[in-house]
Image 1: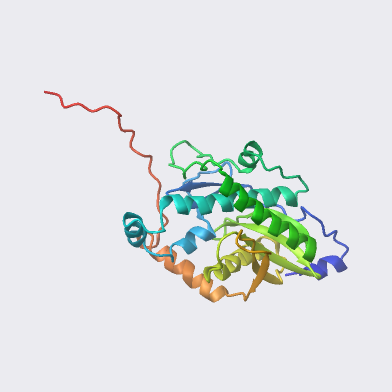
Image 2 (image 1 turned 135 degrees about the vertical axis):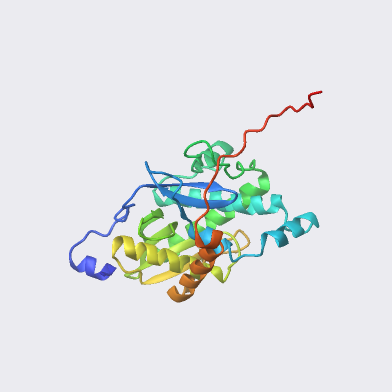
Length: 279
């Protein structure tokens, strides 16, 4: 396996776009979980996203349901709000990485989100984006401002943005927010708009395994760039590579699915909207 310095010594041009998907893959969401499948193939043989795997280690569904029913801070609205702020911020960071300008109006921001289409019209998708309001726009602006200040300060050489990582030989897939060179070394970075979590280390570890398998280029550093709107400035937090722990987490996830098998998705029942007892 080569590293970025080997490529430089060989005269390889280090530039944006040098890492592009080896296999075109699409994604969809079902019941809040994200899955990737190879384009133009049977979508019923998907790969779970890294975040889907890690979500299996989160609090049990029954506990989350109890929280919602008891009107605590954990509500569907709060959860969706924070998720949408993250979705918009990620999409706008990608626009910036491609050298595009970002305009803060309802139409532009909503168009910046990638479309979420069900491959065959049979899978119930995630909720539609909630309408933007003044508070959300301010939170997104703060995240974007933190990102711009970090790029201006650290001057990373960005090589890939929102890079889909999919390999049929591996059992999970994902999307790397940022692959860049900082001080001559290659970083794989996930952008975070929420609070730091221990599971973030496992997330970027699994991304590193995917990236190195696909491109045969070593990632020198993994980390998360925290651009939370509550921060005055962004913070890049480096994590130690932990492949053994990540493999254990994946093994636990698979063991919990139908005795180790991936779930099959069935077409939802097409029930009528009108009912009547026949006498």
